[in-house]
Length: 318
Image (tube, rainbow, N blue to C red; front, side):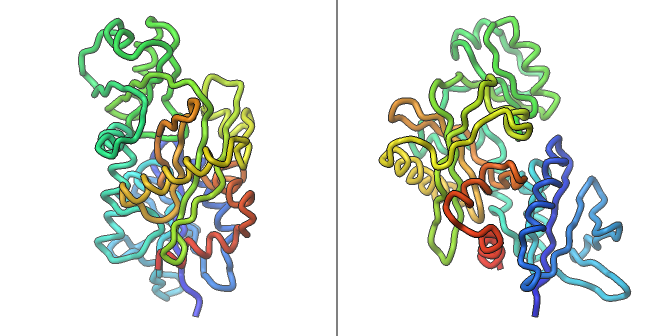
């Protein structure tokens, strides 16, 4: 008997339209001979399948008088509530399996500041930073003195580079802070690390961790921003043209962080390579799955069939 899969996309953050693209892409590659796929558009209080609302009391759908219960939820919401643990907590309470990290790990990793502090204990190399909440007093001169220039100002909770600014001059800091605070109530200011930007996906199959090929991101823009990610203004080289010893070092770090944080499902981690030093940037527990996204490119580079890849993610969640 075919299993019923609730493929959830949309969400309530600036990334909701990208999430829909991810959802449509995954839906087109799921094995329909094995699974009944119900595309759930979540926007605010509305969770609907083709205009029919989901019953949130038990996460079910009624069509033609028949109540449909889902065997698992495939979460493809970037940002809230699908990447920060809110949706995961709801599903955990109902006992519905899902494909991402737990509610706790999702919440921990979604907040860049909290994730970095957790990884401090593991000795992971990261950029120096300063954390501020809305209303906190700060002096641009003091920030520049501590972190130098250039630096990055980014929402502590957010993705797809919304609200992220590269600051080259002290007088740009206030405007950058204002832009970041449009996304959330806390901001992370980081020194701008120099080096090559790398990213690496990882997932589990049959109890064994699988690290995908490493990708190098090359862009003429100031950083890997929205235009670089989704409008083709970057070049993603996969496998990255780096020595195999360094590639293996990146994959080993990805596996270490995955285990240390207690991750589950598919995760993508971003790094800066400076010489032979690897600096962790951030983790994506619901990575983009649009046709232009990084993980699908890594899957193709690994010679893995996309349909089989998504079958693995589903079966590992059940």
